[in-house]
Image (cartoon, rainbow, N blue to C red):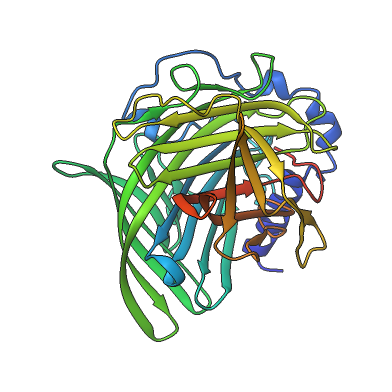
Length: 364
């Protein structure tokens, strides 16, 4: 087994909660990792990594093209701090792990292409810098560059038979989630994250499929979140949604679920085209319209409705088969895909839906 495969296997075990030391370490989690507490986020530093915290991710999703030729894409970098002692020199005892996921959903061909990577942060070919967004996993990268008059996120990823390079420019100031960037995930203060978004983003991209290359434009969304304890007791996972509305606004919503798919905690944050809070979305409820069984044999609540008062909105997947197999990296399966928000036959926006914890409880 190669060193990289060894690290990937160990990393997956750690995040899946299968480490032989897991039961011992769980008791010391609250003492080992700092708790998220109210504070003012400071940029550009908070664009960068926060290595003291247990879990962190930069999650960029987007739509390229329109109609039947639309393509969804996502690039995610995860950083995870283990509880191995700094003085432990073993390659199988890394202090910081880095994971990267990338995917394309191609409507015209009804094809889902996915790649993932896992390894230990090295500071060279695998890095997550603390001063600003600058993430690298070998030839994959995501970095923020300040250009007049906008900030730009440059990214690149590739897999077997595909590659995407893109630039995503900001159109709005940072959106601080929750209370000034402190996003509660439960009734207790410790169940929270620091969380901000950059949306909408205007994207130009170069897509390579096989030997063909095409230039595309569209919109994207970036989430950056870090925490030491997200899920409350009894929670098995979450449903999350980020939609760029056609009127220039944005809609973000999530719910934390128990093993009966009942919501334990929920939140919605809608913004108008100026980035200000928008009315009309309070009391949003998630409601499954059916189920879809993936190759993993996990059943996901797709399609899904969003219900606000007496109004029904539909989440329509670009393609159904957008399940991510992350067993060699962050562990397990989840559904993460491009969706459209519709009311009756009218399209209101495009974005991404994430469904976790349906096959097995999420360990994070």
